[in-house]
Image (cartoon, rainbow, N blue to C red; front, side, top):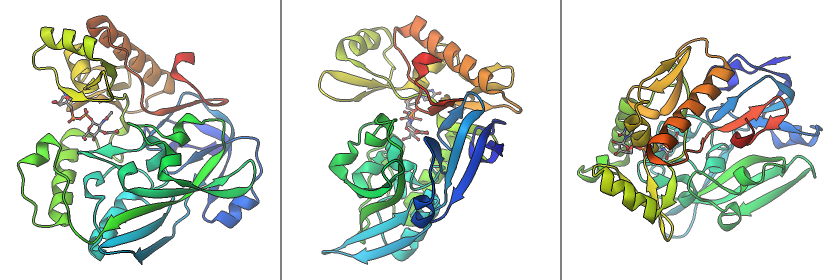
Length: 332
Ligand code: EPU
């Protein structure tokens, strides 16, 4: 058995049948398994049970930086690098664009799967392509940005669960010109002399609201911000004037899950060993010794309370695995 406790930031005490740490593409060529769960730091996963299969821990660490046209730089980052370390080292090299994503836990390879985003930037905006290793066909393939199908907290890699694709490298197109993106409410009013200053502010904002997984087990936002019809959003807005709304695709409006959860009376609650975070209610936290079934039960409770109050269905954002592999939340 392989202990997965250090490989899920929830800190749940779960195991898999076996586990292999991979540091190079050459090692992947020798890896044969019908199915395997691929993990970096496990910062966006929930294990509802022990996993009856193999887990690949991706620690492919390589980095190359090439000057391109004008002020552009092409950065080829190994998928096992820590995303925040990469951002920090690029700022030191005078290469900018990723600052708003500072302090997001997890690896470079995990980031495109969810199209991680924070403070007005989604990582897909800065990705040129993603190199994957197909564990079924044993070939490498490069996905252009278009092929990645980036959407809000989703991508080709998240939607095509049956394909065993291990992201080996993420290729970013960045710039040596500091062009701060300040659309997020808490950044708009500020002036930043350089990328380090913006990074510090983002880290400060994050630390105020989100628990540090090395201190309190969690997987970041447990739920996605729901995207509902303009009709429903308008009806809710008429009833709750202070409800935050964001534009989404044609005819739709994005709501703030954290706000809905708070108004439904579920902010900072504790059920057994789990709860919702006091400063940001869309984060489910391990209050010590949490069991997987407690996380599932609390999430279902929150979803039911939000549905009963607002008629809005919340969807979990974390990738969820049971004993057989990735599982859809509707089947839990
Ligand atoms: N709000 C509440 N109560 C709460 C939480 C939020 O009323 O408990 C309100 C806030 O006051 C604000 C609105 O809801 O008006 C939105 O809150 P916030 O700006 O904190 O962002 P979010 O939409 O809740 C998203 C991402 C976070 C990301 C932040 C900042 C999702 C699911 N989450 O949260 O991403 O850090 O924006 O950009 O989109 C993650 O994905 O793991 C994550 C932490």
